[in-house]
Image (cartoon, rainbow, N blue to C red; front, side, top):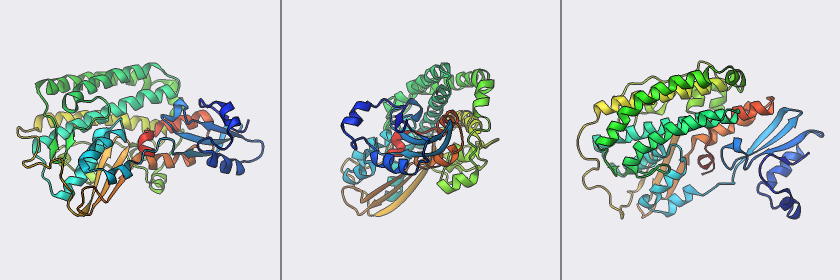
Length: 399
């Protein structure tokens, strides 16, 4: 059964064109190290549990994962290179296509790096609108992860609830972004649209609504004995493993480390809101599940504070950069907290029309890197649960 594939690959095409299959180099080298008699199994690159075009090569000893290796490159779009051949204005829409579940965090990282480099000052109202949009976007990302994760484990109903709540969030964010997926309302020096009375009314109605739904989620899913037995004690990831692979975000916080970029290195107006950093209480797949659900409540609390604190005023700075704007020579670095962990943009400019270098740090890449170690020795079904608990968005991992 060597080469058995759970994805939707036509085996005849592989036989007719040996060596042309994407990732064939990895297959040959992976199989060379395999113990005779063990099964080499492909998860992906189209398998639903991989949440995108990810391929995971697995060596199975019976039903146990003896060794596995993620294979990337099926979705690589050269975002960094595009950032170096486009002007900052032209590259801005790309950021919403790196992580389509939390695009506003990527917006903030790139725009913030450019603003640091150019010394731009963002009006207070624009800063609060950025925070509100980013936190609602984080809630939507966590909700979609929640539904998809439970579906990985065999429960279909929750994803229907998740999309119902997420559509309400998209109704709100569409008012200020004009989009429902690849959002991009950040601008150099502010935001492109102000929130109207309907925008703020929908937020005020949504917060208590979702809090009630979270109670229902607890009874339907969180306290469900089947889910708990699928997750408790599965895939423990401690702080040491996170540090070795550079994992951040909910994975690191579930391991017990209270690290959050919004408090460690405050940006925007995050230093003007008060919120706890949820950690633990356990570092297994169930712990990562719990942390993200608590983070939904945390984001709702942050948005509530923002609604009370947002001032009147302009949403763009005076003499905001025009389309022909060039970044001054120098370099800057901006880190923000995305739904999957720390997002970083390193921007280098020589004063030309386009940046000299754009380096994008995607948290999903580091988070995926620890999967091979975390899944080793588990049964295949548990490996899928571990993979889902990492909350991977492959366009971000591959970039």
